[in-house]
Length: 358
Image 1 (tube, rainbow, N blue to C red):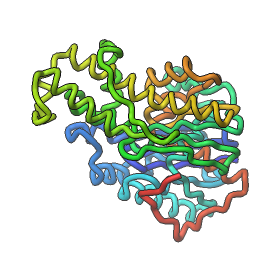
Image 2: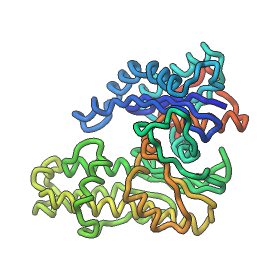
Image 3: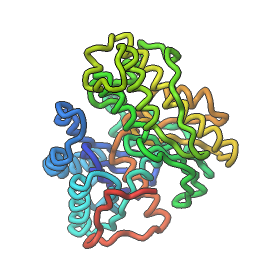
């Protein structure tokens, strides 16, 4: 079973071929991130235009790297939500057209759910035999029941999977997701976009215990990072001797590099502890057999360290290249849909769902 996955939910144009839900044959990504850096965030129209330019070459590269022709492909999977409307539209229309033209079944994929499925990739095809294409994959496939910790720019969720396509959303953020909080703190400190890696880099030279920051008191498995973000703002204002009326745009030039590093390290520690603390409670209550982490923030090394040190279950991590948006996770979930006889979508009517949730 070989599935071509297409992902265009934000600023990465991505396509990949996955075999039998666990073997990665190719993973092609064309990112437009450099175009968005001057604006400090993703500009939807620029992202959509980039997808138009890159989508067909990226799909062809995925097929070529996998040494596949269309005769070797058993189906097409595409992200139809959640994400930016214009970006999603390019991927969905391309996948619909290819499905019709090549007479392939089409599977609509939930982007957030797909992030979880990056953890099911445990083998590499021939293309990944060179150092420049090296991936570090988990040694074993997750087993059910499985606790998924989903952390990204748009989502912070704990999800308990009893089996494929059988899951319960235990909790989620009520405001900012953890990745969004990282981005906003980066802006306060004058760190470059994307904010997550910038905050993590600054934190390396800071003291994570320099400042005590608050953790939101939410229902058992729910999250809130808005208050933490505001606490960082107030902290930065106090550090330069100003009141709450001082504009955040003026903070970077007044803060020293040491202050920025200590604030970044203290924020990162607190935000990640919030995630890990909730995961511990869920493990104690539900006793899952495996734990996986998914989403862009899954690449954060401090999060990986705290999870390894703090969880009672061993945890394996997806390759860093499979934490950010990619076609491999889409193709993997598509494989499991096909292998479990999930209904295919109508290629003439599949529509985008920008606000799709789990």
